[in-house]
Length: 254
Image (cartoon, rainbow, N blue to C red; front, side, top):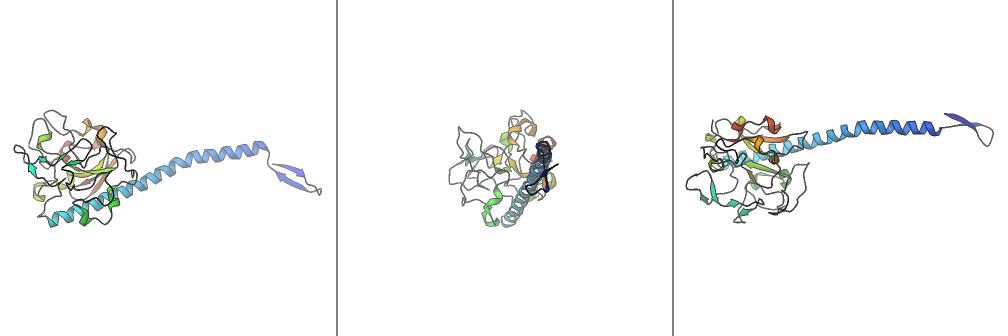
């Protein structure tokens, strides 16, 4: 700091250019250190809000189960089960863009591109439609067969016998009686997804064995500190990375 003579003969202080540059450099350094910390804290808050969404979805599914003879909510009401694999539905069926045919089919939860007010099976048990959107991904892009996959949604575990090439008798909890889920604390029910679909059949390209999460890295959202939030059949919500997921978590059979 230097001192200069004022117009009345007094001395006043002033910063030199070098001192100002040093102060600016220190402020930039502090900003570079603190901004990533703030961003991580903001994402952590969004992750907690997302976990709260899944917790509310779990409560809604539990209420649905009480009203429908202790049966888990289905991905959508089945009109025509497959003759060979009764746990697989031929009609309605899901198109490549995530829409259902017939289009008037009511899903368990609307897709990301569906407008507010779209009907769904859990609607009577949900206070706000906002719970179907993770705070980290609230966009509603259009879903088209030739366009990019629409993210921003939660999916239900839709695995069934027809989706593994060996056609092993394995199925997910959706649409199943509660008594058939022998290990609810280790059976996945709902999770965050990066494919525009209301359901997920993870591992359909794994010949002979069926379910292998590592074969489908494009399915998994990793925006929450490198992982995603998941809901299990017993109602607890857990943060996971795909590498930690176990094959047996996707089916109700031991």
